[in-house]
Image (cartoon, rainbow, N blue to C red; front, side, top):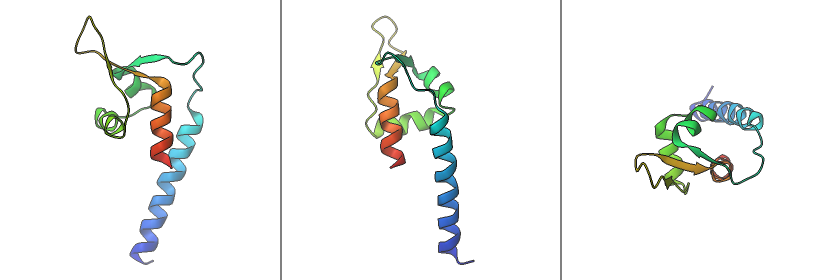
Length: 87
């Protein structure tokens, strides 16, 4: 198997697995819902690095007025970023 063929097989496999994961995500009700950064990592089974990548791709972060270390995201914004990155 040529290297380009192997790269394409790997890319297709990753894309298929990602699509399955995204399809299984719950559809949020009553948008906009706001979740913490910790909840985002848990719900989507991603690392802090992935969340930072989402922010670089345009995900808006919101900070608590009472606790400046708390970061929140609109669930609808996360879905939009995931869809944007997937395409």
